[in-house]
Image 1: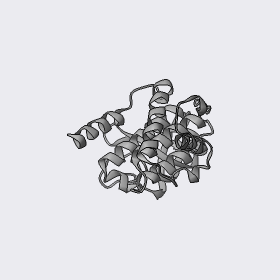
Image 2: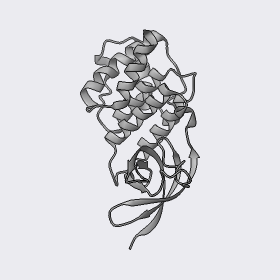
Image 3: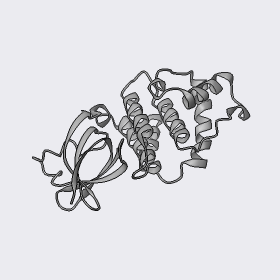
Length: 221
């Protein structure tokens, strides 16, 4: 027999399924990454239409069957509508979700990764923080959480300010991650480090990065 469970989580991705349904990939505090089916969510009058989209964060009431979850209803805390209204911000948000999807697993304790993702999406809505810096912060801290990042930055030829920035990102509380900015010169150094780490640790193709590259080329053309 199945049971009803309530999970705190965020929708990483949503895909069409069948004629009117959706298949959601969600990152949850209690169960890690889970696949959830939202029946009828693609119908215009469905109560699940608004809550079965990427970036939606809240409490989800799910029916847990033998091999899958079905979405019954949700109490949304944050839709992150600002991201959906800004193409570049949406691409960064999708990239952050892709990284979370890459690293997280079902039944794992992914509470810290969920908190990082939520704080990072919030940062994308703030114009005071350069999105390229938000990307570096998110990538580096995601690597740290998943035990894949060397923290001996002294071996790198970097300025004291860049070294301090990297140490701060790896060690500060998640709530404090997006409370600073840096000079363009320091940001360039940090981006250089993350380019190296990306090649070493973040395998795979990320569709959102391709869109970001196109948008960047359009800006400079």
